Image (cartoon, rainbow, N blue to C red; front, side, top):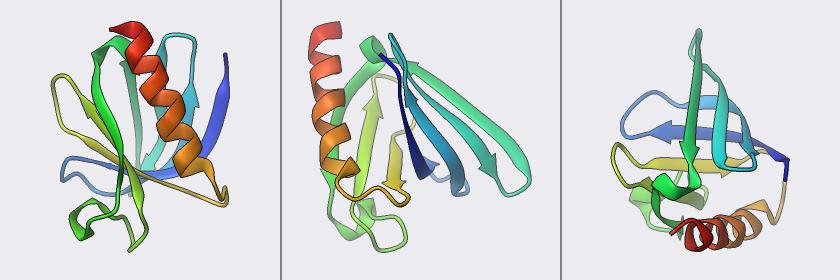
Length: 103
């Protein structure tokens, strides 16, 4: 399985990053840039505790509903999709299924 999405994201309180999210065979992978620095994060599906659509003001990025990904350890990730209407709900369902299979 290989799927890619254009995203902006924040991990915990770090600066906003922009780039792509990939669903690999065994992990969620984020690659991009935050400010002027390259950033990358790969999280195996088995290391994800939960995923949900964030609609509260604390969960929003740039005022938009976001996807909130909570790893078992570490800071939660808040993601928003670029130019892909419907990707939020689609990815929330796919990740929830991958978390269930990995448990």
